Image (cartoon, helix red, strand yellow):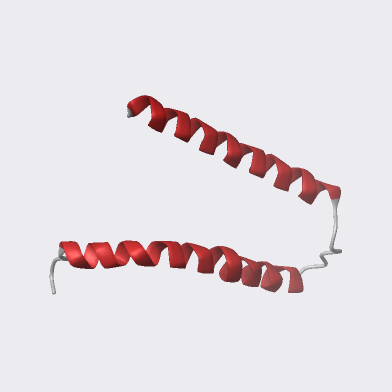
Length: 74
């Protein structure tokens, strides 16, 4: 029980996408709902939209950069 075998590592790798989908589609909205229920959130503000767009652009830029790096290494 001390060390993980290659089979257990492989089986754990299949759980990572499931865990990611669970966190993105369930845990994050649940946490946001809990946070908004404790604040005086009005539902819409331009600051939140600007911040969300900025974060999305940063993520897309990182994805584009990482795919270029992977192509150059292979």
